Amino acid sequence: MARGLNALVVRLDNAGDVLLAGPAVRAVAARAGPVTLLVGPQGAAAARLLPGVADVIVYDAPWVGFAPPAFDGTAAADLVARLAGREFTDAVVLTSFHQSPLPIALLLRMAGVTRITGISDDYPGALLDVRLRGDPDLPEPERALAVAAAAGFPRPPGDDGRLAVRRPLPDVRGLAGDGPYVIVHPGASVRSRRWPAERCAETVGVLADRGLRPVVTGGPDERALTTLVAGRIGTDLGGRTDWPELAAVFAGASAVVTGNTGPAHLAAAVGAPVVSLFAPVVPAERWAPYGVPRVLLGDQAAACRGSRARDCPVPGHPCLMGVTAADAADAVEKLIAEGTS
Figure 1 (cartoon, helix red, strand yellow):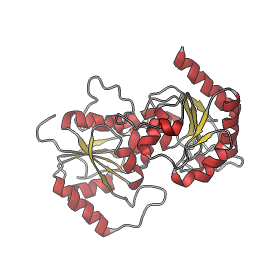
Figure 2 (figure 1 turned 90 degrees about the vertical axis):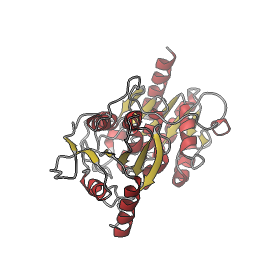
Figure 3 (figure 1 turned 45 degrees about the horizontal axis):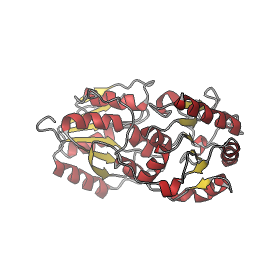
């Protein structure tokens, strides 16, 4: 650890985005010591799972997310005061390709942060000390590592740059049950990225017919969905796991079938093979599960490609409806066979 460094890493998005920042967080921590991570409310639980994180600060930024809060001057002033009290020497601001680091950089300047690094296509004025222009084709973990390296925190020797979570994970044998299993995770916060529930339910049946035990996962607000998908065949864990427990359930799976959602990145962070039902509204080369065996399903050349649409703009949701339950089960068996060969 270098003397005098006190580093803050910023990633104000959802849980999956925070998990994708994990390799960059480790790079900063390798030189500066355990870091403070500034995240949005939806990313806090994931942030606490990351190696190299000593503390988590939560701020609901009015410029981030699909339904951002109204600007609250008191909340912004409170954040500035809290950050100022920590006397950070360095801030590494991580953003997606469509976001600007400049709003949070202004608050960091007001808090007295000495050195701020981020990617900005817009002229940053005096808000950034180190400014990069992003490579639009880089996977998100590599984009974040590039920002950390530019800030003086290269990936340390021996670190493979993959996603990771803190170990040990909780004992979830009482949840997942005995013997091998395959997870079907049907939910996603963005509607255009969801594989239809009926197709997920069909997959549970096909997996069971092939001798693979299906386990269905989801959050507390997805219990009706997981009940439908699990039916009488699958083990329904909807609403029964917190994030560390969900990570542990994923870690024990032979494979995970899921859409482009935060739990897909959690599966990658624990090394689980992923069958990714990927709607091309955002590019798979940036957002597909990273660093693990995977099979990408879905028409990546569909008309919705690159639209960033939250609701499918094409009648019938053809990019994912063209994928059958048998396709998903075939992909699962392929990943399992590759893992045992």
